[in-house]
Length: 241
Image (tube, rainbow, N blue to C red; front, side, top):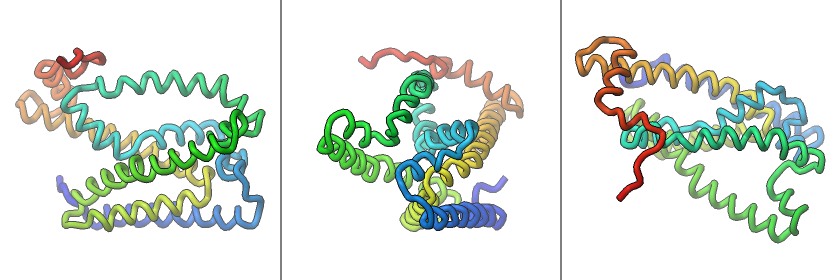
């Protein structure tokens, strides 16, 4: 099995990029001719189905941070690094049942809108500027960097900055069409993430089993991990001394 990208891999990247980019641009041009407001952009004109919204929530919360950063932390600490996801699931249910209906009833679609309604424009502006800088200089930079590191490692060579720029342009084109484009492309992303995650886990466990000579299947590799590193399967770890 080759560890570098081949022609078929590049073809998949290019085809996916073209399909998503063209779709995003078409929706963007369509919205330019029609009403262009916060509801149309952030709520996808109210046309999203429940499965598209659910897929978008999952895909928006999973990125290079999880596949690379969290995987690395899991190697050192174990599955305890994912403990906060259980709390996040509970929080999302509470928000969906009790908070979202209140926001929609009052025509509030963003956090700055809520702060403006609850307090004043100054508070909303401070929050908007703060989160803008946080996302630009912390969230987006780390995601772009980690994604570029993964692709650059597969492609070989030294194209880190070019790949980061390409990922940024790709994300910009998608977001032009608003949540309607983002949500429906996230449905594809979720399928890729789930299948890719399962395949990656299977390959990793199989490799572990082969390395320790206990078998060439994922179950044998998993049993080795349970025997060799049982502390990595604890959701609560001891407090550092």
